[in-house]
Structure formats: C-alpha cells, structure tokens
Length: 270
Image (tube, rainbow, N blue to C red; front, side, top):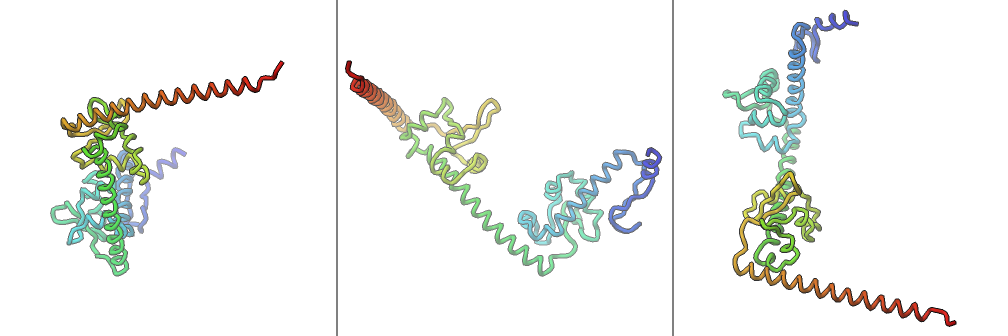
C-alpha cells in the first residue's frame, strides 16, 4: 500500500480538462503536504468564482448591484463572497482568462462576455424583485424603530407605569421587554430585527453585556416636567396595586367565610 501511495504521488493529476489543456494541474509528490493543500484551496476558490460569475450572476441581486457601468466588480467584495484573501481571489481570477478579466489596476474583475438575452431578462427581474424587497425591508425597519422609540417618547413613557417600573438607574430596560410590546409582538419582530432597526436610532441604543441579557437604553434624560409626571404615575400605580391587593384579600376572606358557612350547613344533625 505504501509503494502504491508513493507511485500515485508522482503521477500527474488531471483536474477536469484534457492533458496539458485547460483545467489540468500537474502536482508532484515533492511539493509536500502544504503545497497540495494550497493548490486544492485555490481550485476550490476557482470553482466558487466560476459559479459566482456564471449561472449565479444574473440571479444574484447583491452582486448585480455591486457592478459598475463597465460591468466590473470590486475584488475586495468578491474575496468576501468567496471567503478568501484578496490575493487568492486575484490569483483565481487571473487563472481564468478565458472567462474573466481584471481591470488595469487589478482591483476589479468582470466577465469577458456580457449577458445574453436570456440572462438579461433574469437580471432585470432580479433587480426589480430585489429593489422591492429592499424597500419593503427598509420600511419595516423604520416602522419597528419608530414604534420602539414611541414607547420612550414624552407622549408615552411618563404615563407608562409598567415601562417605568422596568427602568434601572441607567434608564434601560431588557430587550425582551420591548419585544413583548403588543405592537411589535403582533408583527412577529425578532430580537435580531429590533437590534438592526435601532442601529441608527438617536433615541435608543442596544447594549449587550456578557454578564446578562441585552438591554435597550434611553439616550436622552427625562426633563423636569416628564420626571414629575413619571413620579406621579408610579405613585398611582403603587397605590392601585395596594388597593388591588386589599380588595383581593377581602374577596379571598369572603370566599373562605362562605365556604366555612356552607360546610357548617352540610354537617349532619345529631
């Protein structure tokens, strides 16, 4: 078996094309393991690159919108999509001269042949659908942001005893509390969507701490008038809770007395 492996290591391995033609890669056993891994890695990147600019191109909204008027795409972006280093992406593009070409500065790449009629139709539909989806996502994000900000606005927060009771000394509440709000819960908003929506907010900031769950912090302090209103709101809430507790206690006491009387009536006479 060892002799067989040694012989195989010295043979030329064909990577999909005829001997000496496109796709053939001669690898010798003298290259060592690192050379083989590097060649194999480059072959994988080439396959991904050909797929990215081949059958995938016309249906890839992100790639289409990254293309300039001369059909060039930034090589940095391509490297990110391929999950490799910039130099590796450049090497892969340079090796596929029948299909791809680099710009003069070597920072951009494009297909040699433009889209055919069928591909142009697919690309047109992709751009239309992608644009509509992007607009819808932006509108949804703006709606989520405005709804979350409303809960902390002067028109809502000073009168909202529940939110005020969740506040800590840093004017923050748990992210999960905001998600439980009826308007956001009915839309099925996830924590990830809420974090994205509040990324550009000037009113709220999401803070993640390894020691605990994520929290949403109010960036502006309440003014004097809002603080007074909030104070009265909390006082009324506490008083109401006490009254409710007393009422519930009385109702429970009456219920127990009623049960006791019924028990006495049901006792058999001696």
